[in-house]
Image 1 (cartoon, rainbow, N blue to C red):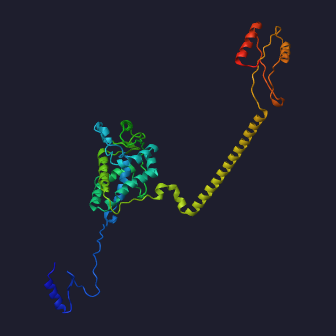
Image 2 (image 1 turned 180 degrees about the vertical axis):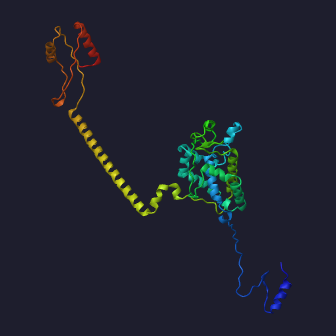
Amino acid sequence: TYDQNALQSAADSMGKDKALVKTTGNQKVLNYGQGVTMGQPSAVVRGFVPKSLSDLGDFNPYEAVYQAIQAGILLNFEFPPASPDDLPFRASQKTGWGSLSAVGGQIGLLKTQASSSQELVRNVFFKTACRRVANSVLSSVQTSPRLVDLLLQKWRQGGVQETVVQVLGPDDGTSDILTVRVPEVNWPFIGISGTGSPSDQMKIDEYLSKEDDYKDGDPLTGPYPLRPYKIKGESHFVDEESRAGLSDFLAMCLSSGQSASYLSWYTVTLSDLFPSFIPFIFDFDQFLKSLLKAVDSTVKEIESVIQQVLQKIRQLEAIIQAIDDLLDLLNITVRLSILGVSSTSGSAESLASAMIASTAKPQGPPFGLHSGLVMTFGGPGLGSIAAFNAITFILGFNA
């Protein structure tokens, strides 16, 4: 609101020809002067500038979250949480379980294939899965000073950093945010579906029970120890309190990842997915040319094999046709003829004479080509011959 008289008085004081308020239709507007046009106000753009890493000392929030996720997976935090039926020590072994259930399906398959912790962390997909979880909370972590302060407090004063070092091994200064430290201690894993099925529970119970038989100095055959365990004189373990602190750290940062913002993105480098592909990147043109030549050579080889197969098929067709023509030419048929001969002497000479003198002989095939098989058998007296002749008549054989 404004006092029109006061404004007009102010305009009058500047000169009689200056009107600070002018009337346009039924509206009164301020007269800004000749050639001045007032439009709509510009939109206000608001952004957040996160704390500089230099303000946090050697604490990098993203790298801390990334390493905490790695340590949690190595401690089986993606497995189903403890149940009320678990005995006290078993429940302690499962401290922190369920904190990383979102990656259970991905990591479960890798743990099935990996024979040990050192082999698991060297797998490129282990790094990719850890980075994807860390990237999902990157925006909320970097744009929340209060959250960064809480994570810093838990990382340093809450013992999370010591837990990560205990599991992953100390940082020798050569690792960076894209790498994973290989644990000094090596221990095996089991692969489960993550659904908490009875078969999974049996595998878990059998796996955890192996810690009951741990002896200092022997290789680990089960999970990373909850109680002090010495390897080469150095104690290695992560107790229940340390596991709970790591779980709280992960829960604090992962729960903040539900809110979306302009930094909600993640990247996966080509080197993460295909390390062996890196040398070809520097000479990608030559790589493509070599690949095309190899494909072209392979196609030509396949074409040659196909032509040879077609040629063999055509040869087989010709052979089959020749056989079919030969069968038509010879008109081969199968005949069965029976000759009943009464001979008391039973000599081969009398049998041959009888066959030659017999009538109604089988007709030979055309062109004078024939072949046959003669079988003889005998029986007692003329009665058997008569019976045999009757059978041949009934069966319709040519006698």
